[in-house]
Figure 1 (cartoon, rainbow, N blue to C red):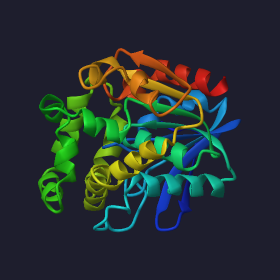
Figure 2: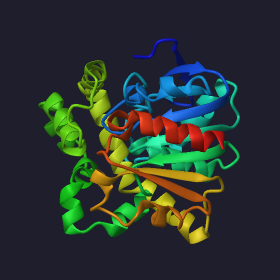
Figure 3: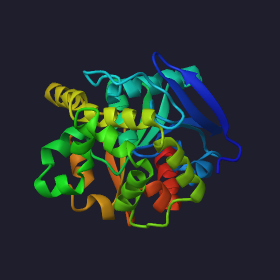
Figure 4: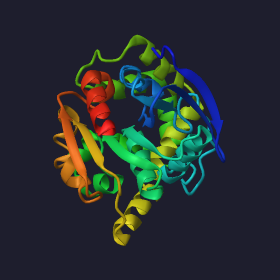
Length: 292
């Protein structure tokens, strides 16, 4: 699926980041979400490598990347720390500034990176998310049922780890089928990669830690930025799925305009996994946005 891509490992302060990269041109960092790995970009990244130097890492604790044990304060898997991983990784590759795209949890790392490291991010694309603070503030009983995994995964250890770990492949497939509108969108090789990753107890623990951070320190970081009036300085593109987000929030662009001045959006007729359900449209939108 990644013909012509090289594989690297980069050591950051307390994580080892596994990545694939290829291409030429301006650097473009692309971040995956839960419960996937960098493989989610398999149908998009090859279409971009003629125009960009595409970098596809696994977030710390996900896939083939490793990270520290979860900590009681949930900082080890906070989006602030994950964003710092990405800045260090890109610097090690020789890129002090870059374009940035993130889907799902990777989108949360991406907008945190843009807030904490504004000089590093040229343009930001967020795929099928709004900021964490807005998600929690707008959550009703209906949206809590629709996104039950947010509070479930944030329950203190070891409850979600034990429940998921009893049959991780079942839970992985449950999530993929629950959020996808096009149920057959997953390439067999991609699905096998997700299954290998999600079968690891360390990945289950890291992903739960990721969500616990999202219900604590990530939320606090967002709130502190709002109170200080900090905003994303670069242009922002919100790509979102009509099937997944339409009943959960207002138009995503209206939410993102609270966080950034220059916001555009592209709704797609698909489910949550936009890079696999609508790869041609996603690749074209990213190319046009980052070349502009």
